[in-house]
Image (cartoon, rainbow, N blue to C red):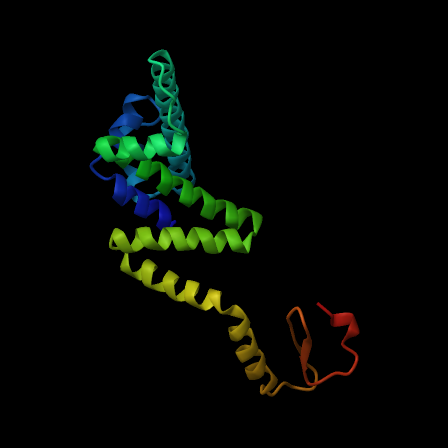
Length: 198
């Protein structure tokens, strides 16, 4: 999967593969294969473990911060504000918070495919497209940008395609049916389209 390869290029040289080996999650060869997404299921599981770990560590650090702030008599910041503040003052925190956001975007994409949620799919593509462009995966970023642009005006695209379909010549033994939320178009034209209603 291209998104996992892209995440691997983001994590290249960060010590991520070595950390997975030290934590006894995987062997060195398998950890290095995660960077190239050689085996999609294993790579996705490695990223799931990483995302869960980063989330747990982030919340533990926030819990420690709230305890310290309350013991000093200060009002603790909200989690999102605290994360933003930590990212501004600590580059390592910013890198791993960005990594967590990338991995969550990938999981959002996988979920959209598994559950067939088109709006979630479009949102995930919009997020991942920026990453592909930033990490110089030009073919994916260009193709997905075109898809997103076409997806935004899908009603216009459907009307154009339905006009083109109506101009097709179809053999008498065949029938072509196109539907949208408003109407049913058939080639050759039919009067009884009630049973084909969307």
